[in-house]
Amino acid sequence: MLREPKSCVDIVISLIGSSPENFYSAAHRDIFSAAIELNAAGTAPDLLSVAQKLRSAGKLDAIGGEVYLAELFSAIATTVNIEAWCQILLNLSMLRRMINACSGALVKCYDNDAEPVKLVEEIETDIYNIRNVGQPDVIKDLKLLIKEEFQALMDIRNKKVEVGIPTGFAQVDEFTGGLKPGEMFVLAARPSIGKTSLALNIIANVVYRCSNPRPVAFFSLEMTDRQIARRLICTEAQISERLFWDGSFKDNDLARVTTAASKISKAKLYIDPTGGISISELRAKARRLKSEHDIQLIVIDYLQLMHADSRLDGRQQEVAEISGGIKKLAKDLQIPILVLAQLNREIDKNASANARPKLAHLRESGAIEQDADIVCFLHRNRDDAKNLADGASVDAEWIIEKNRNGQTGMVKLLFYPSRMEFVAAAPMSEEFAPGTTQS
Image (cartoon, rainbow, N blue to C red; front, side, top):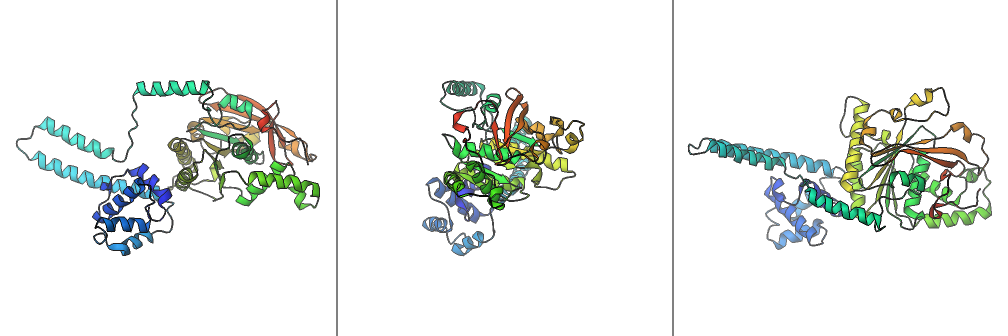
């Protein structure tokens, strides 16, 4: 908290609350209380402000002075494991509370005047209180929920709020309602079909092509941040990246590239190219981005390249832990998470080259199908794109195979390999329609 107060304080409060009683050391209780009070007053509880707060309260010398605060500050190099540390703290605090409760229960049991039934109830209450330390109150009265949801439905009907974030593909949004808060949206495909390109097209629609741009976080485990920026520029300028390598880039293309770069530079897109990121690292970074930039969508490319926090017996169990962690993160932050996923090789063994993917083709884990609210497949014949002229398109399909809260179906797309862009084959909203010029 002292090292990165802006991002860590909110995470800590959400996980362990604002009570200092979880700390064993009296010094740490005082430091924590000072940090929480400063944060509540709108001041970042950094090293200097916490020291001044403790000095004003006459507690600075008691905790070990500024020297001890400096030691705490330099004890870690990064705050990426803040959530794991909070869990360790809660576990130890729970054990201490259990020791106190059991010791107290033992003393009460030796009291000859104790009423057994009443004593059991007291002990049960103490244990229950310990079990729920740090846990938010998630039990809701149905009457309140009905009132809230009725109003939410009326707001949607009256166009006061959107059901979800539009993907830019109107027909897909008709099936899914867009990318809805708290939902895990899986987009799967075989290698080299274009799932990253489609994800970047959706990101472009959300962060700068629409009338209501939103901040987006993109965790790219496969491509570098520079590759992503380069592809966004070329797609927006509607030119092939190949023009820069083979010397065929012309002066009249420069205006389009300049315009595209200027437009994209204003977008609130935050790219993390960390390869092999773990679910705990993803959670910590996502919480920080939500706190600092109020991101409204997370995109992950792709799930099978992530790692679980603990060593498990098999890859299927590891993928299941990752999938469950992503779904939990979507619910905790109340934003949608678009996850790209790889399909297994069974579909390639099919006799038909144009065989369409099914849920059973999701690679390595049925947990992805279970955790996801929506599972979609991107499908096209890879051979169609071979020896294709610049500016030409091939047919593609966006198949909605699972939709927890809506219909399933298929939407026709056109894929332009030269500029790595998917567009709706049917009439689309003018807001997201591509330009008419082609390379």
